[in-house]
Length: 128
Length: 128
Image 1 (cartoon, rainbow over the protein chains, first blue to last red):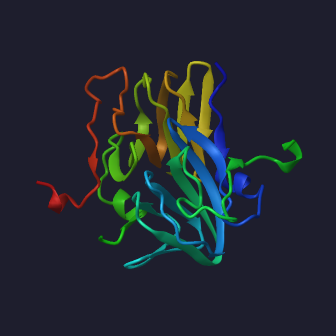
Image 2 (image 1 turned 45 degrees about the vertical axis):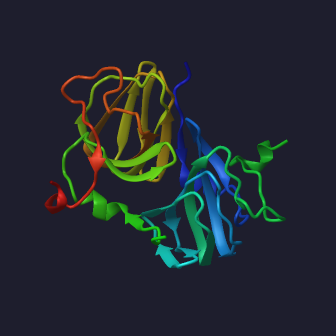
């Protein structure tokens, strides 16, 4: 059996610059561990059957909800329960780790042009 | 619907000092998000049906496997696949975030006196 490999989040974050396009860095049971860069505003959406966790690594993540807004700083996490509409935004480049079921799509129920099918964070030179 | 609340990991870590006794700080689908303090050596064990993820927040986590050892530093994560025997240890106080199915017990197949049923990380003054 090969030795489990560790993942350095900063190294993985250095491999891409696109905003709101989560990359997969790990798989735990039915869940994907992803990282994403957030800057500017995303779209309002919710996930019908999936809770979603954000852990902030850098910057400040704002989550708008219909009833208010929460600002999440590095070293802080927030779980958005299934069914809860939210709209993420960040004024500056913000890095997050996401923890979501493998079935989760970034735009949830909203779909549309900002939908991104996550792929592994890897050296672009290795992508076919 | 109440606004989702964020969790500050440092604040939660300040609420307990016990080693190898994970506290729950969040719930995402079928998974618990836990934090733990590690210092000294744990016991060899594996989890029959559950992958386990460690994200290191402070210190250095060593994971012994039957075929070698991996040292994990802050900002790094490692997934221990189900069935893989491991023994965590740390030379200094080390803080980790864990992602594991709600069914996971810290000692896995090994059981014994170091088994700890995780509870919420909360102000001791609030515990009944």
